[in-house]
Length: 354
Image 1 (cartoon, rainbow, N blue to C red):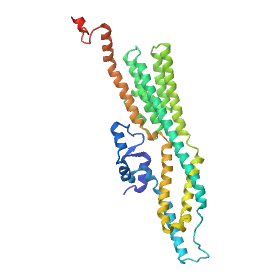
Image 2: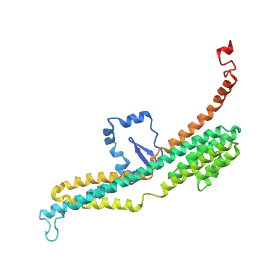
Image 3: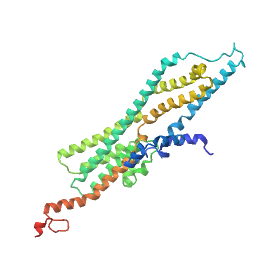
Image 4: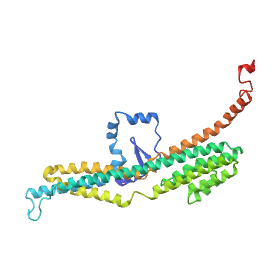
């Protein structure tokens, strides 16, 4: 098979597994009521078990788990040969040790894994919250722009810039994104060329928004609100860049990894007297379990590929476009009510008709 196992691991880096399907990074769907029912289904355990071989987390464990299991098998073969007298006893002793050091250090390993996963989940939560603030701020800013009295051309251009900002930010935080393809339906070609040439595309889009807002005429308190929304966008950029550029302290990550590897390299020696050949499956189960917990922490440490950013951007665009389409009909209804007439020009109440 062309590419072999290496191509599988490359594919796993570019995709996330979701209910038996590989999804490109950043293309995770937003959950609906049906998805939640499926998620809570009593058959979920069987479904998750059957999809184990296609799980990104489990597939990524193949190299370390199989390597450590192979070491356990080699130690078991060596100890069996030494105890059976096939090897000179004075030169090749049976590898065995007390389990007391493991009993004393097991809580330390557990705490390392718990703190590692908790720190990664905190980063995931921070990334989710900042994106919720960006999307909410964009919706509110779009509503303020649509309330302006300027002609439709200027307002539509600014609204397109507002819709483009989350997309540019998404491309900024997810490696491998095609910013030109993602923005070509939102920006005019000249504007798109400026954004693509920019070294910092989200800030470039914010410059377009800021300059466009200067054209609109607002009361002072509304302009203060506009400035606060732009500040929210700048803050969102800063938080996203911090999450991307500053990982969990690398010394902690390396310590956890080294502890796990050394623990499982010596585990067959500790268990030999009690388990004999069972050290091989015991090492496999222990390594698969503990490395899986560590792998989940590593996976969610970078939160943005795990979030439904594309779907959030599409949802924002649909909301703004629907509001733009409904604006004229809503205004007609309001004006008709102010005049006491229905939209077709007839009186709006029976008394007026009589």
